[in-house]
Length: 316
Image (tube, rainbow, N blue to C red; front, side, top):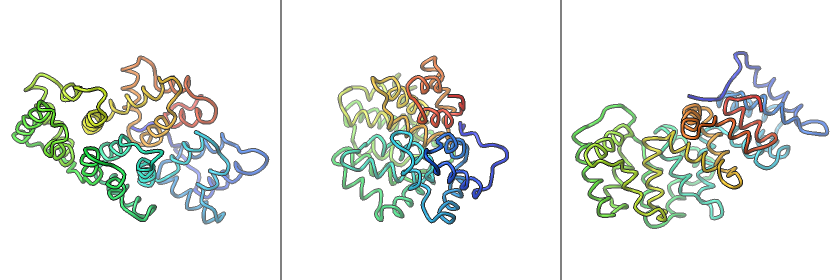
């Protein structure tokens, strides 16, 4: 469930553009007006606003926002304003760059999006960067990380509910053997996680737990210092328990000494339109504190206001 709230009567895209233009005019930027408009429009409406703004004023709305806003607030509004596929392409490209590289972000995009969402992100990557996501992932990763990430970012998983229980039993046994042998990057481990439907993987891991008495995540905690094992654990969580994965990312981002604004911004901007309500419920269950209260305690100013609006809580 989404946390984004859209008013029942939405002004036309041209009216929203006029209001945004007013927010940019004069001596100071009217940040509250920007939040009121963009923070309450869905992806289709934001795309129409962006198109209408370009036609009316001869400037990309993103460039106008970049000139008017700063810091974490600017990044949050910019990411939110992007079409979801374009946003994923932007984040994935950033994750392949030397100073902002993140195998976790690449895995997160690959494993928490639907088959079509991931396909559209790859198409948006072509359009924006004039190359493919997979070639950048292949170029900027090495060894076991490349071996796992490439099939993940190129997957087009079946999305039906059908499950082959015989296959689940066979592959649970296979995974248990490989993990017991510490062959974490074995071809079969990568094949199962990189190609099977999420329903099939869930059935396999349920059989794994029933047959061997442990959740596969526990068996993948052999070495807490091993970065590849950490990525493998996160991959399993993203495929089977995405709300638990995102709750952990948010908990880590908010509870650190000094907020990890990058992670907080990424999760809120990418999930507000899809499942942030489920993630927020998991956060409250796990931490006994509402997510919006935790955000409000840890952030300030316009950044806080925009985060809270997107998280479904308008009163900062």
